[in-house]
Structure formats: C-alpha cells, structure tokens
Length: 131
Picture 1 (cartoon, rainbow, N blue to C red):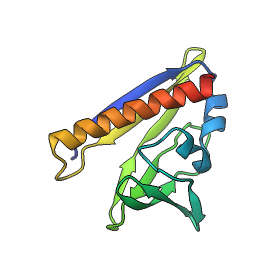
Picture 2 (cartoon, one colour):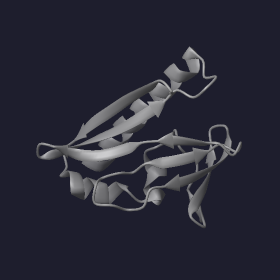
Picture 3 (cartoon, rainbow, N blue to C red):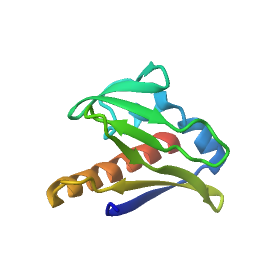
C-alpha cells in the first residue's frame, strides 16, 4: 500500500453543474498545473501533454453521474500513477477532493512539494470557477 493524503476545496456551485463544467480533459490545463504545462492533445483513448518532467500520457475516466474525474498519468516509464479526483455535494455547493499517493522512492521533500502543488491547483480551480 502507498501512503496517501486527500485534499479538498469547497466551491460555491451546485456539484452537478460544477462537474459538468470541469470534467472535460481539455479543461484540466486551465487549473491543474501539476498535471500538464501545455494544452492536452487527444491520442486515441488517452491525452498527451508536456509535464514538469517531460511528456506525459493521461487517461481519464469517462463522463459519469457520480462526479468521478479520476485520471491515470504515465510519465514515460510505462507505469501509471492513479490520481483519484471527485466532485461531491457539500450542502448547496460542492467539494472537490483529490487523493495524492506517495510514489515508491519518493522522498519527503518531493512529497511535500507535490502536496503544495495539489493545494495550489485546487485553489486555482476554486478561483477559476467562482470568478
């Protein structure tokens, strides 16, 4: 088992409307700088982008009624990193939750940097959709 941390942000928008606004892979680069540093380009069932450490291939869960926006990131070595992402109801608004798994061989400094990046991206999403 991998150590994991889940982070969330509350957004003042009905959860289904928020999910419909943000579930598309093309929308991710507008807020998820930790995922891609470029526009996503579709390549069959996956998407290609330029990441912080080079090219990445990303697979996304299909559109669904449950608010699931999981994605699987291949950084080039053939092994995918699973990133669970959910939009759930929080009263009249929504909660967006992302689980970060500490990858094998990742030191404390790198994991702490990833945690900061995830939280920065979630805050960016909030600013973007509440503007």
